[in-house]
Every structure is written in C-alpha cells, then in structure tokens.
Image (cartoon, rainbow, N blue to C red; front, side):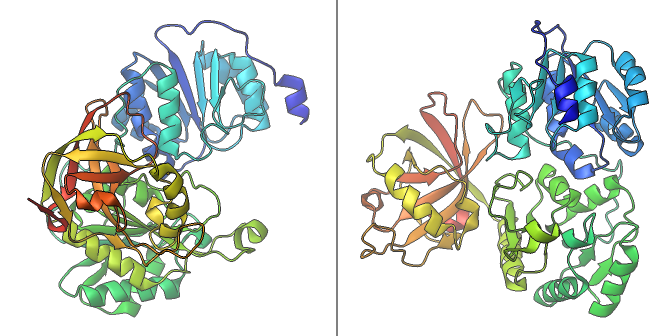
Length: 475
C-alpha cells in the first residue's frame, strides 16, 4: 500500500513508437509458463515489434534460440532497489510492458514508474499504472487467450496460437514409450503421492501389457521414480532416466501414443506438440487459466479437493481421482490416434431460437459427467451439412436429465468431439456435435447443432467440420 501511494500513477499519454519495443518480465524459472506464452513472441514479430525478455539464466537460450526473442537480459530474480537503475538504463525506451502472471509486486511498481512505458498490460486492474486492464475482462479465459488479447489490442489479426516446443536435432528410434506417465511436479502437493502413482502406473501396465510405458522424472524425482519402477515390477514399465533435458523429453512426447501428466510443463509441451494427452488437475470452484486449451487430443481428469483443502492449507490434493477415469481416456485416445477423419462442408444457418435459454439449464447438468463442455457458450451453432449425417458412436451419452423448470420431462444428450475450420482462423476450433434426443433437428439429418466456447464468427457463413470417421454414418 505504501508503494502504491508513492509511485503508482497513471502513465503519461504518448503514441506508441514504431517499431514497438515490448518488454516481458519472467522472473520465475517455470518452463511450462514459458512454453504457453511462446506463441506471443512469434506473433508479435509479425507486427514488426522488438522484444526483450527478462528471465533467469536457465531460460535464456530457450527464449533466444527457440522463441526468437530479440534480446534476453538474464536476471537471478525480481530486481532489487539497487538493481533497478542499471536495468532501466539497459532497457532504454520501452513502449509496451506485458505482465500477465499474478499481481504486480511493489518493486515492479517502481520499475514501471522508472521505465515510463506507453502501455502496461496486467491482471492487476486496481493499479493506476495499468492501462491495459485484463483482470476482470479475462477472468474466465485461459493464459493463451490473455496473451491473444494483448496481440489483438496491438493490431494483430490472424493469430497462430500454436506453442513453440524445442525438439532434439536427432530422434532416437529405440525404446519408444507408447504411454508416457509423469507423476511429478515442482512441489510435492502438486505431484501424485507414491501410493497413487503406484496404483495408476500399475493399472496402465495391466491394461496395455503389449505397450512400453515410460515414467518421466527430473533429477529431483529420479530416486522416487526408480523406486516406483521397482515396486511395480512389470517388464513393460521403465523409468526414463536418460531423458535429462527438455528437448529430449519433448522428443519422447512427440513419439508417444499418449501422455499422462499432472499439471506441469509436460502438459504444455504435449499441447504444443499436439500429442494425445490426459492431464490431471485439481478440481476448483473457479476458472483455472492454466488448463490446457480444448482439443480433440486432450482429456482432463480432476482430482477432488476437500472444502478446506486449498483455502486453509495452501496445498493441493492430486490423488482424489479414479484410475478407471484415466484408463478410459487413454483407451479413447489410443483408438482415435489411428482413426480416420472425415471433413464435411457446412453452411451456418439460423436455428429455432430457443437453444440459448435451454442450454443455460442443460450444460450444467451435462458437464457434471462430461466436464469438458462446462465452459461452452450457452447457445448452438446451427450447421446445414453438405451430406446427411447420423451420429452412431458419441464420445458421451448423458443419463436422462430433468432439465426443464418443472422437472417432469427428462432428455438424453449425445456429444461428439469435432473441430471447426473457418477461413478467418489460423487454426481449427475445438467444438462438440450436440444431439438432443428430443430436438426436432433429429428428423433432418443434414442439419446439426454444435456447441463451443465463445467464437468471433466475423460474419462467416461457411465452415468445414472435421469428424472422427468411426463415430458417424454419412449418407
């Protein structure tokens, strides 16, 4: 509060210089956070911007050589009072300061005051020096969407959100693990307990005895991983002690059939490589911005948290999920990794005008057993397909749900993971074919409803629908 009173003030208005000089402070040493924000550097360069990153020595080469950042200034931690002056002089004129991780700390307020940028993007809406206020505006969005908002505000249009993941120059074709399991994170409470890791890996080994299962670990967790391998005592389970750099781990992820990981850098590397992924996260009553983006290749298993678990202890419990949940998702992904995909052209048409009201009541009920649709917009996109389509193998069929206000009528819902391709998007959009068993649309096999997270259609009238071939019947 004292620092806010002394140095927090509105930025002096001035035009952005060209080319832009963008500064990102990354005082922490989190590889996963760096991977998630990697696309920002590539897309900012398309605007002609010059980018400087402040980060720990361990991540300097990653930003320079792999992310293509123009300049990296190594810092051991957040700056001290005595270190601010030299750092400000070394940076020179700064146009944009991007701070999207947590709150701005007191020393950083003084840093911004001395830098005098034209624009500061932050989640800390309460500060006067933040004129790109993204806290409330992006509270329900993930980290990727937050960086995208910055790019859009700076003038970007067609944004490619694919992560940059460094790979080894040569891939070793031997000892490829079909299923990679990572039970370990940066803290014990973010990792699986030994008993839970033992139960999970043993269940995977029993379910896929013909597959090689590799246990990922870091130098800090290597002893426990070897102990886990010994306790499992299966010929198809091995600790991958030879993978001791992020590049080598990325190479193993790229060649794996499925990756199973707790919330850590491995999750974001798998997302960036478009690998089949089962991610294990703590359940939360609020939106988690670090969840992997929605994708047909990704499943999320939530570990239940006691009501007093995190708020009172500041510790998470990653062990409250069933092995069966993970096994089912791995089975789906292994099947779909070899399945063919169908592409159908579609026109976007007007619907019946009732879905917005009904979905607001239906989605909370459906998401109890199929949580990946919880963040979908409560309205449907109505598509007139170029060919009649019948859904025969949905990814999820709900129980009969009493969603009407009276509760007397029950209805079943089928959902299928699909992707939508629009001309104005650089990448496909994850979505779900939504089949309400009581809907009149079921009588018209060329018209189908789709749900997705909020989309900027920009007046689009056409799209292409990508569907798993085994799940549908096309006339």
